[in-house]
Structure formats: C-alpha cells, structure tokens
Length: 386
Image (cartoon, rainbow, N blue to C red; front, side):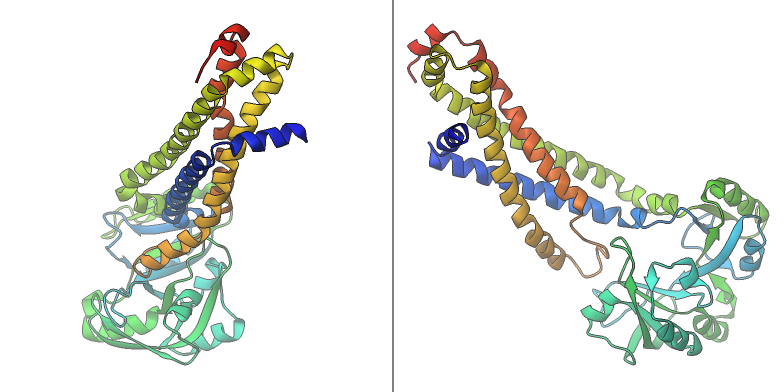
C-alpha cells in the first residue's frame, strides 16, 4: 500500500504537468480511435463478405450489364448451390444529397443467398406478391421515419421517369458489418418498364451473386463460370465476394493506408509526450533516488516507482480518451453525409488496441528514466542539484 501511495504522490507532485500530460494522451487516444473507426468503416463491406459467395460481373467493367439468360447457365455449373442477381438503380429520393443503395433484385432467391438481411416471413411474402413493393433497411426507416405501407417516390436517372414503391418490409442487419441502409425492389418491375420504354436495355442485370457448396472450391467454380462465357458478347469475371469488395477499395487504398499509418504514428506521439514527462520527473528526483539507493532500496523498487507512475499516467489518459471516443464517433458519423458510411461503429478491436497501447506505451516511456536511475552512482546523485 505504501508503494502505491508513493506512486500516487509522485504523480500528483506537479499537478499541472500531470493534467496536461493526461489530456495530451487522451487527445491522442481519441484521434487514434476515430481514425481506426474510419478505417474499419471502409473495410466493413470486406468484413461482411461470406466465404461461400462469388460475384460474377462483366469482365470489362462493373457498370456494364449481363444478360438475364446467364442465370440458368451459371446454376448448372458444378459446385454452384444457388444463384441470384441485383441491378444498380440509383435514382433520387427527396434530393441528390440523400444517398443510399437502391437495388433491383431477384426476389425469389436474394434473401436466401443473403441471410444476414433479416426480414419477417409475413413481410417477405407480401413483398414478393406486389410488383411495386420494396424492402428497406432499418437505418433508412429510421432516417426518413418510414413505416410499412408508406410510398417512396424516386426520380430515375439511369432509368428515367418517376417511380413509386410501397414499403412492404423492413430488414434488420444480422451482424454489425451488415449494411442496414439498402432499398430493395423487384427487378421484374424494372425490366417490364424498360422493355416498353427502352427495349434494347431489357433483359439485363447488373451482377450475379453465386452461392457455392464448398468455399475451398471458389477458384475452381469461378474459372468454370468464366470459361462458360469466354467467347460470348458479354464475358464475365467471377471472384469471391471478399475480393470483389477489396477491388472496390483499391481506388482509395492510398488514403486508407495513410490513415492506418497515421493512426499508429499517434501511438508514437503518445510515447513522446509521456516519455518527456517521465524524463523530466526522473531528473527532478535524482537526489531522492540517490538517497533511496544509499538507504539500501533495490533497483527493482526504484524501477517500480518510475514504471508505476508512467503506467498510471498513460492509463488515466487512455481511459479518458476512450470515454470521449464513443460520443466523438457518434458525432463524427452524424456530421458525415447521410449514407457515406452505411456501417460505422466503434469496434471492440479498436477499444482493445487503444487500451493495450496505452499501457504498453506507459511501460516503454519509463525505460529511459529507469535506465538512468539504475546506472546512476549514488555519489553523483547526491551531488545533483536540480
């Protein structure tokens, strides 16, 4: 108890310096938490990927469409368990700043292939029966105060004209990484209208989602699918869902890498701030440590005093930073444009890294002053005037 009391007394000897050090560490931990959360949000789509799902798209570009007739051919490929598809609709809801994914889907099998989109069976059956029905994520329902039976009018851009959809279902995300901000409606409804207004664009889908029996056969099944359409007018590129999501992030890879690097540089800044404080404190107490050595206190005891003070400061700063990280993350999300990060949350991994880094930095910052005290001669320490 006396040992711990002495650590607390030493920590509070210079109250202003202690407060400033703790605040500096807290700000650094807060910045680290925010940056790691943004990186986590970027990779949410990758983390949500299923190992048993493949994405089959046009080989030239994702924005090019594939014939609807490919569905049955893909389904006959050995190793394929189920096939569904989706088509990017885009459009404008209220105004152009209100962004969220709006997809025309295969209503028969989409929710079988994506079990993480949890819809009540009654709502799903009603949705399947009505061609102008849609299902929205819980985030969209909350954001726009929508409920079952409400009408969502859209102004088409890729598919021009006015469109109206009736909300017949609201899905809940099964996992934290599941996007809760999609709007899903009947592809057949879209195709029927396109067939009348632009016949040359009819019978086309955006991409296929293929569920396979064995994730270990992903490469083999992908190759078999692509070989089947190798000499067609719309050649395909099939890859795992994870690879597909990672390719989307490739354009922003430099930014993400920079944020990753900066987030860990912040840990170095914490060490510099705390290390400077500990070196100053140890220098001021040189005479006291020399007296303790002269009285016979072992080096381990002195090292414990210094390391204990350093870890206490880093722990206080880390705890304060973590306390403010949670509301700061929520505030950051609120300040971002709606739908910019569909999945944005403070992960347990980020909290664990922040807490662990704070403690480890506290230990690391005490190494230099400990080394100086342990190698100091008692006579030199007693002569020191600081």
